[in-house]
Structures are given as C-alpha cells and as structure tokens.
Length: 113
Image (cartoon, rainbow, N blue to C red; front, side, top):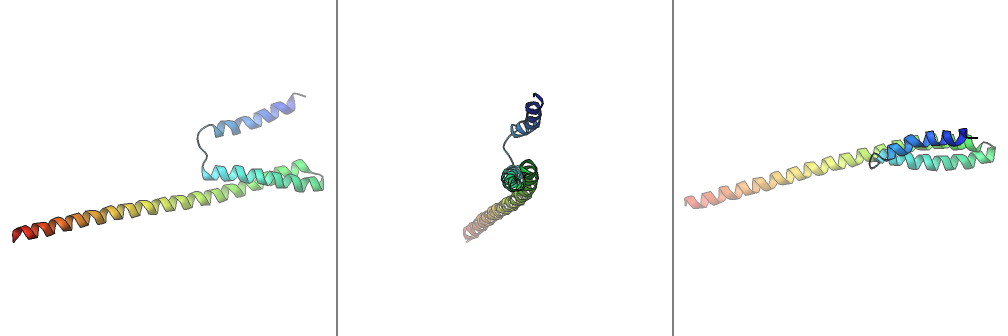
C-alpha cells in the first residue's frame, strides 16, 4: 500500500531537484515538452491496444529524446547567431575606430597647410 506513493516520490524527487537548480536550457525544455506530448500520445495509443502505461512510457521516452534533440539544435543555432552578432559588433567598432583615425589624420593634414 505504501510502496506506490514511495516509488512515485523517489522518482519525482530528482526531477524536482534538477529543476530547482536554475532556468532550463533549450535542450531541457525541449525534452520536457517532448516527453509530455509523447507520454500523452503514447497513452492514447496504448489505451486503444490495452497497454496504456506501456504506451505512455514508450511515448514519453521517445518524445523526450526527440525534444532534447530539437532543443539542442535550437540552442546551437542561438549560439551561432550570438557569435555572429558579436563578430558584427566587433567589426563595427573597428570601422568606427578607423573612421576616427582617418578624421584625425585629415585634420592634421589641414593644420600643416
């Protein structure tokens, strides 16, 4: 009688502790969303075949895996975009510095005459 609630509590404790460590990454968010959708779809399919729990477990695992892969790809794209933005910012600063240098050189040329 006490075994089922204890098992559920032991299963949920690491999940709750993991979520308490800070904000979730895109991979983690994708895995959670995919797992939830997969478990729901698996439960519906499993219910039709008479194996609701098994369908939910398989669907949840496949959904979590797929969601993690998709979330990882989104995070990689965000990292590439951020890197490109940093490079553009650096190049703009360099252009402004060259413009200021050119202006100073031009002003010093005028002072000579």
